[in-house]
Picture (tube, rainbow, N blue to C red):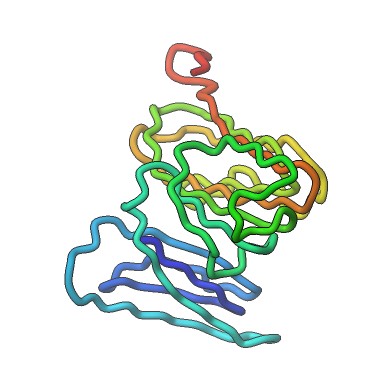
Length: 201
């Protein structure tokens, strides 16, 4: 399951005593955390929240993630990923060219955003991540920001590096939005170093 919290200000979320989201800080927040292999039956969810100043707001919800074999794509009708998504689907890869159209009739041709999530197996090493297209993009690996270029208002190629990725499965989250013009996006990565010298994949 993926747990989500949208708040102003700090928020924490536990499942059966395990901390899933820990963002105890001031400011508007939109965060998530994963909990694998949740067993069937009743569970205890606990939420803590504090308000420091400004608007007082907190929303917490969760969704099952293991029914998506590839990328879990959540599509929104604005550029701010405002919940709930109008479309959730399995995307085999992030490599799209919609031109002047939109991904789905339920979405506008301009001013929409997408969040893609996937569990990916990585060999140990250093990696460079790329996002082509769009007006703003973010990429996180296990919650760590690798690419953070939001509100750019022009088409870009975005890239970021993450060193010493451990061997095994890791959660990749891509957030992307399109304001207008030709809509296209592609996400890739490459291993730039491993033991024995540079050996790109």
